[in-house]
Amino acid sequence: MLSSMTGFGSGQGDGARLSWQFEAKSVNGRGLDLRLHLPPGCEGLEAGIRAAFKSAFARGNMQASLNLRETGDGQRVSIDSGLLNALSRKARLADRAAGRGAATSAGDLFALRGVLSNERTAIEVSPDSDIGKGIMDAVGEAIEQLKRARQTEGQALLEIMERIVSDMEAVVVEAKAKADVQPAQMMARLNERVTGLLSDSRISEERLEQELAILVSKADVTEEVDRLSAHLVEARNLFKSGKAVGRKLDFLSQELLREANTLGSKSASLEMTRHSLALKSLIDQFKEQSANVE
Image 1 (cartoon, helix red, strand yellow):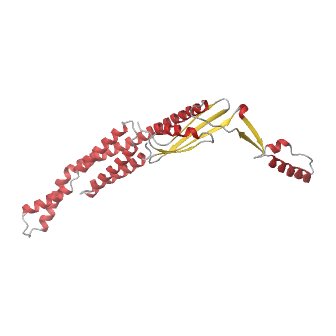
Image 2 (cartoon, rainbow, N blue to C red):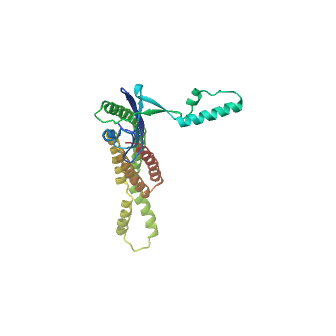
Image 3 (spheres, rainbow, N blue to C red):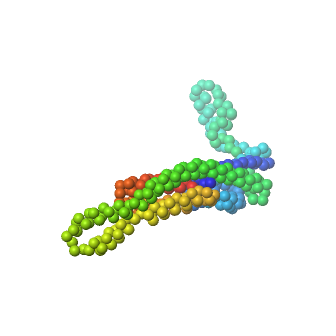
């Protein structure tokens, strides 16, 4: 099974005075990079949270945040008296100018942004406290959700990449059939052309055959085709490994492209050139998908 690097997860909980929510999301990344945002007083949880992510994931650019909210008796309301008085004076002037008496109520003023705000009591959360343990449980829940989301998308990636590999295997089979007959065909064509050009030359027929054999051997693509087949077998093995194989798949795409390019440069026929171009197109698709794999 493959895992992608894209997903979202959250976890929540509550205690006597606080409720909390931890959220995490991830996108593609070359390594594991966690940007963590914690409220004041929760710095003591950072090491444990980072360790949990490092244990669960190998790659991905991640953002995670913890939000706390006071509940019950722990919640206090703060009034910005200066702002309230200023707004009250302006409201009276506006009411007087409109000739409508005291039309603006205290409730209207309190509803305005900035007049009322929640004032949180300063807290210090340690990993061993009940709140700290509850928050870490929420972190674990968010990580599990994120893992499941990445695995679900990874399954979709796997189906796409298996189809691409199957298409490449079909092209390689056709290229192998052409590679088996290409040297003999090339030798026959070269013999015919060179014999005509050098009919009056003093070069011996034996020497000519040796030089032609060297040219033909340089155009032999049997090894390239065999290596392409081996790389595709390795791709399927990586799909089944159950490990974080994104980097290996990316490297494998480079090796596949190298062989496909060599196949094209050695091509002695239009058919082989078409096989090379088809492979390179499929390898581009393979590389694009492998960039999403953990």
